[in-house]
Length: 328
Image 1: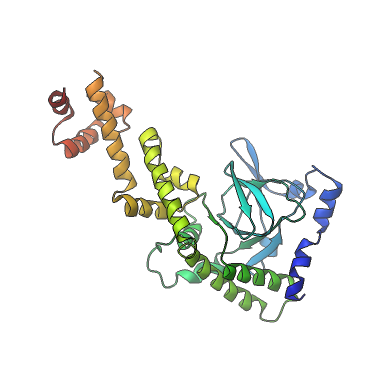
Image 2: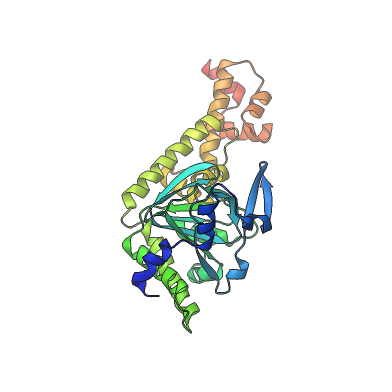
């Protein structure tokens, strides 16, 4: 297949797509043989491309004309919108991707999608870790870069995360590299197919690393500022339940990256910001109620009374009772 034929090739209806055109609103029989699990009473299918990953990656055109039911993958998945657009639901939140957009899902991200039309072509690339492990050979610690941190964490088998990245409007170089990988995959395999493919993946990942700091820098920094404002608001309103893990998951951010971002933008860690809010609320209770100190400590979610006294005194240089007396 020549490169100029790629567009025509991707627009051709696959056998599955033809079946769905003749059987609208019906679920494919492939789901009958698929493993699944339950999450919040929802049936979550597990997409496993192990048999196809003989070269450590597989390229699949996402089936059009049908709903993509809630599922997760056993491998990191790269989704590239070749043309048109698509509407995903990621962790039950709506996400619209358009031509040139790029989404990367970790293994445990639950997502689904609405049916795609004729011109809505999305390419899925499932990859094994060894494809990107070599990127970290020169790093002695977790790299402070959103994309690299994401890949680094995806290799951590001791902790199940639920992270995804969205890169809007990939630069032309990234699109060219992705389309080259697609073309190589669906063309007649050359003798050194695997080696060539892996080299293209290295180039792709390096460009994705730089994309965040390239043409979309101002937009990305604005997004960062919006997220920091959301962090502050959530701590203000939900100090007793909010966690950094929860915030990172909701925003699709790597846990360590978000933690470092908060320190970079605010000069304080998430724990320090949350602790300060807990103490503020405790001061409010001391001034405006007759609730005993031990009870205020519990309301403000301190581990124990001694810890509350210690942190309160570090901030105010006196005990809660002394502070109340001095401020009445």
